[in-house]
Length: 100
Length: 493
Image 1 (cartoon, helix red, strand yellow):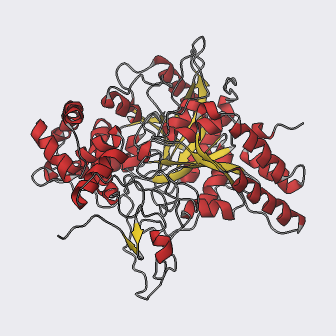
Image 2 (image 1 turned 30 degrees about the horizontal axis):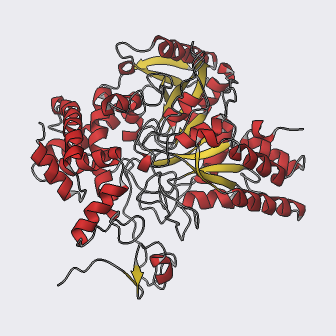
Image 3 (image 1 turned 180 degrees about the vertical axis):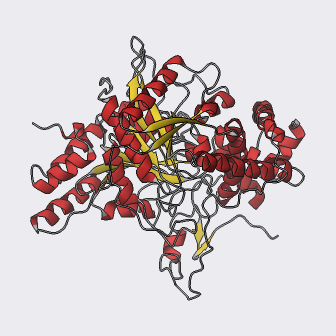
């Protein structure tokens, strides 16, 4: 299978990566080379094989359902949470206007 | 005067504990070595004060008669993928440039608790995507090694290329690495150092910037098997904050190190013998078999029939997981924001991600987005996960006949910077021997074997059963004792 320029533009849009014409020119053949390479997986008979879910078998662990179970990720950390924000205003993340 | 930078991790730790020298002297010597090696570009950020503060604490603890940790007095390099509190943790990327985590990763915290200090954050391929350290936003890392009779700058491997260069150049006795498809073993092999990726789940992934979560594992890179065993012991252990962390005790790998392989069987996977294999790599593999026989092991041929399909499966699974993991970089919560004049939220996302990710990262996000998209999911992603099951089953079948597997770590010695950047596939093929163990979640190690005729290091790889780091370390030790690898790069930086 191969991808067209339009399909790559569509994928880039889904992935929220803006790409100009030159970037698309560069990307399309590279993606097609890689897709051609992975195509060989189709040769493998996997009709009775389960897809891997976990490489090391493990039980799902649940933490206790209590507030602030881990103080690092519990509440009351607004300053830490916003410390690396490109724009923080009034104790919130600042974003461009989304509602007219 | 003692040259502390020539000493390994254990020698430093034991010397500090015995009072032969102070941790501060050791930290100062390494800070100086780091400062003098800017040409290698191994560090993105240096943290000499962190190293000195940790050293002073160790010296004070010793003076007060307190117990010292297993890494006490050892200054190390920390791969930029680990979140370090208050110190830029950018994963080698532009989009996280300036990000100073308000928390510490579990693995780095464990190392500080064990008495280690940090010399700085080590350069790496952007988001750990690369095999040559040429995708870093902060520039290429130069290997300290040069080919005989050539002045060309060589790759230190990747993605842990800052780590391998720094340890090989004696800027630090040990460093952390992470391995998704070979990023500890490949750089270790081509710079003549030792590195181990433990069983998936041994080291907590909490606070490590995620690339492909089902594959990512942290591990140590150092200059001997024993040093790796000590450091791995300090890094490993159950962490409730990582849902895939293994809830099992960490064995005392150091105490149980034993190079006597009597009664052990070593498997040689016949599918790793590929057409057109580098003759010197093949010769070193043969020599490795002899060394292990000499250590008492029986050597048998084994078959891993799906080896050929491991790399294509990896290049579906890893980008798929990456496309999901890297969706978090949106210019809102941390890192870069690119807001073109008059742009709305969606345009801001797209502009930020376009400006913040390098070409290799974008390519993998696009591949991942494609293989996970409606209509292609089963043909690509589900099929790759089925093949992954088969790759793992191959190993489990092989381990019915052997205890540990011996193979080359890489298909070639170090190549020159720029040599493979135009062809992603030829770059990906570098990991052909390391990816299968990653897909199967197995412990795997690279140990230096020899120098090739160009004077460049070659490594041998050992792959063990799940949770059997000990078997890998023991076979690694047997090779180390017989290889007698003492070569180090001539200083030019």
